[in-house]
Image 1: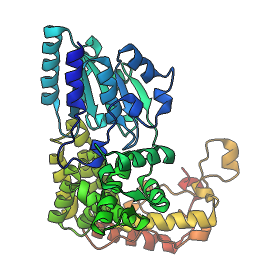
Image 2: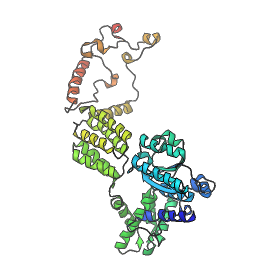
Image 3: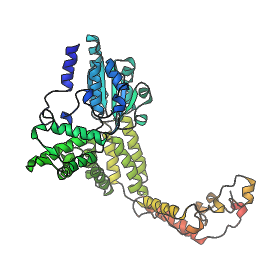
Image 4: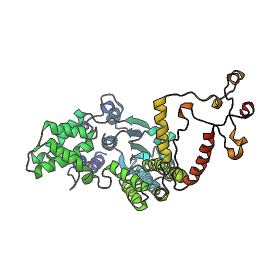
Length: 457
């Protein structure tokens, strides 16, 4: 048993870092004692500490922000239990990969009685059908599940799976925690930067900690680049300027498929707005290949359909919401196909932001003028007293009039003649524009009701 666990630990935590391996990966803790932060889970008497001490393991879901140590913690806890550790990514793997792991777990259990721990990174990326696929094996005890997610499991993980797991919340690392990790990496000669004999000035430490935002990976990646910049300049001290320069370039160097997250999503939206299908598809695939949440892309498409296409093509919103449902139903990687269809449709559709601009104008009046009283003829009159007070009096039921149009006003008196929505002359909005012109022209006449008692309904 000891030799098997020793071999397993050697594979999980190799003593010699791989060539070109980023500093953040090289500095991953090899034991729970090396782990920094998350004292609420690892302190004396806490759940993970007790599990490690007893060499037992229960299915858990680790919920926390990027760089908080979810993957490392999963590996360390699995190693303590003596189980076989298997890891898959929900972004890159599907049901077929899961079946392969399940079959290997069966063989392992039959061969020597050893259980398997399955670590599913970004478990929230799997849809209901994919999560259902391994639920029976968690129930039977064939596998012990450790899921990692940056999203709220209450919304992203199916109820039956949640009820069979313990959700553990990881916090962003504190500034003090990050400082410990940075100093450790700077002085560690085996895995870190200790061989370079570099020092770090205090403002540079403040810059690293501040830029990291509780993310250990981000802090160590920036430190590695800053150290390289200092060495190239012939400096033995890493300055705040080196760190600022490093944080500008680290995404390009260490996350080539997903650099400048916000710039890429901006380019994606602006390409669709500019009706460039090819560019929109390119930026969409940049996000997909970087591991972006496909539901994030779908949500942006739904917003775009309402904001930038609007009533120039009313079907755009239906297409966008259908894409969201399709991606959620199918899951990845096949979900990229409906995403592509939706992107090409939205980019090709006629554009109008008239509804969006109308919303902004109406909101401005609401905030500026407050709660203006509802005109009497528009008020609901469910009781005799309210009718006696004039509620609903003079209301004209449009369907009783030719073309379902009347000379009736619907805005408070202070806002009469206020037009928020001005349809464009593109797509379906050309027809809407003609209809609204007739309706507004009729209301501008403002004829008094001919028979208020008859008109009120």
